Amino acid sequence: MEFGIVELSRLQFALTAMYHFLFVPLTLGLSVIIAIMETVYVMTNRPVWRQMTKFWGTLFGINFALGVATGITMEFQFGMNWSYFSHYVGDIFGAPLALEGLMAFFLEATFVGLFFFGWDKLSKVGHLTVTWLVAIGSNFSALWILIANGWMQNPVGAEFNPMTMRMEMTDFYAVLFNDVAQAKFVHTVSAGYVTAAVFVLGVSAWYLLRDRHIELARRSITVAAAFGLASAFSVVLLGDESGYSATHSQKMKLAAMEGMWETEPAPASFTVFGFPDQAARETHYAIHVPYVMGLIGTRSLTAEIPGIAQLVEQAETRIESGLVAYDALMHIREQRDNSDPAETARFEAHSADLGFAFLLRKYVDDPREASPEQIAQAAEDTVPRVWPLFWAFRIMVALGFGFIATMIYFFYLASFKGMRFPRPALHLAVWMIPTPWIAAEMGWFVAEFGRQPWTVDGVLPTAMSVSALSMTEVALTLAGFIAFYTVLFIIEMGLMLKYIRKGPFQDVEETDAWVIRHHERLSGRSNADAIAMPAE
Image (cartoon, rainbow, N blue to C red; front, side, top):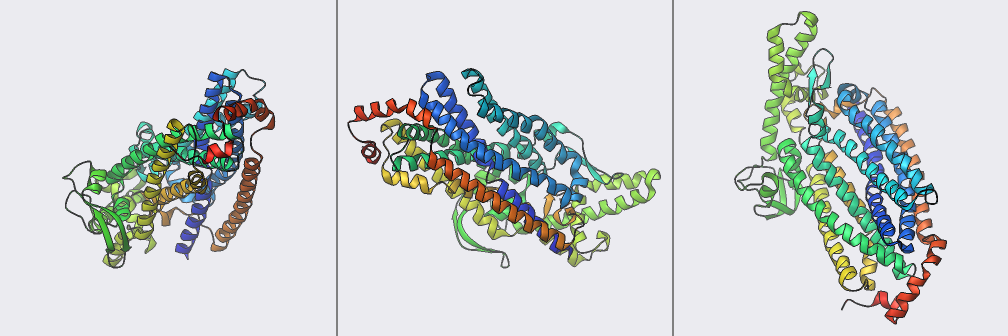
């Protein structure tokens, strides 16, 4: 029954987290794109750039509001569904979340209001400053969230206190500059930039296909292609850095992503395609590229990447070491103020493996009573389900390279072909709009699902982290969240489609109408003909 509660609580958090993450990438990327557009407006004083800033800013505002509404719900879940997690690691995990609210969210929320209502009350430079502060606040918010999440992936700068039975922070600097957290931040932010670039590209292509808002659409594609090209390359390069950091901090996740059942001779190959079979410990019909995984994971041709079988053996050894720490901890707790220095020393010698002993709580109340078979099963539990990780990672990577190719093509057309885009390319851009969200969700899935069975890797198992709730309570709240988020999704899509169909503000569009007519006179052809003209 308790395992059912764990799974249901995981499902609830996964649904709310992945739904919230539908809004985060677009917020991160659009905030920077509109800041770039307003910068060009201030430098050139061309009305079309003001029009672009206000139009894309409206879509940013809709997305931002829904993102806030869904994000607040997630933080409440830590107290509702994951109370032991909050108690056990709250001293560390709570600090970045508090700083996110104090330093980033309030900054972002304050200047969002000035962005929308300050056009006629602030100077051009003053309003531009506000817009950049919105972008900085949005990205700064992501930084603190990913520092908290990065600590769950690689728990540094903290240690367990036997007296309080909690993890306590020992080095804030280590938490702040955690290698995993920094790699996750730059990779996630770059993915958000790609998401916004594809969104702007697709919506602008839709306008061109309908011969509407031609100048706005062409310039928007130019900005999106340049910004998206740099961001797409960054995603791939920074994703490579995430793979390298996983080699040191999350070896099991990396092995599962690769379907690497046995340790291969260095350098390990990369599996492009295959069908992982967890029961048989084999990947069927695998297609390998020699050396690639070794270079990504170790930056060398001589270092090995351990396979799943070897990592399970290591987990069993760590469980046995954790049992020593657990036994010493129980003696320290019994003696309280008169603790034996020998027991304290024994605990400290094995304290790094205490979390592995907690894996046995799934099978017995007192881990010291676990049988050898239960210890072996707990070691097997450290292997996440391989095939979802294997394929989610490959979908993400394939889409990432697709974004690079698309952005190169549109950047070429915008820079060297006079912003004339063939109609098939425009149709492709429209159809591509959902793909960066698919890639982002796959990436988030790999990061979180690949950490199982841990809430905090190597420290706190997920099975121990949940609140003492009944199945009925969790099921009812899950149903409530699904209903509430479905309504929010309908509202979000309705508002987005409404304002996209409506287009830019009419008064600004009329102010810049002479630009459109002037371009048509110079080109000597209709807008539709210019759009459809193939690249020469």
